[in-house]
Length: 192
Image 1 (cartoon, helix red, strand yellow):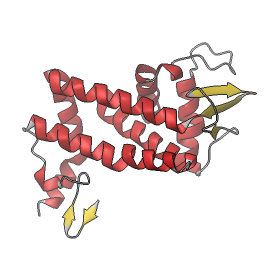
Image 2 (cartoon, helix red, strand yellow):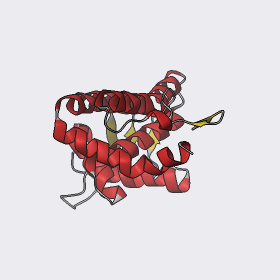
Image 3 (spheres, helix red, strand yellow):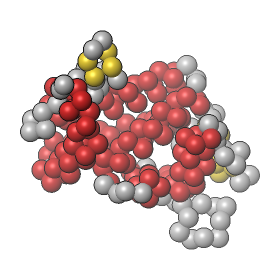
């Protein structure tokens, strides 16, 4: 994001401020990015009951976190893994298939993530709805996701991940390498 003549990593941190060797500051910048670009805007959209827009921001947050946390190259693989590992509701068998390994995580990736990112729509009549009590349900072969509960699950997982980054050196090193991989070019550009 560019503000004035400065390229920003997050609402509060410029790319020129990123110090790969300052653990505390790097984690704070990352928190500011995830909360400032994804989670807080999604929360505001949920408050106004803009389910479609809130859901899209939740999906982009999952995309970003899955890329940083899993280290996997294939988008579908990392998206599904992140969901199954972090949000138990998605680590259940899809009731609409005979394939034992097909989970709700895969279905959410295919119908919601791919549908929205590539086609601007949710596929197979999928829906976001504030009216369901659970995070996800499949009714009459249609997947329905509550974007408010999805956001809450992402926030809970994100807070847990931040705690691990602060305490576990190996996880922090993987995180740091992922940020350098994805943002080194931005840092170089911003430093000119």
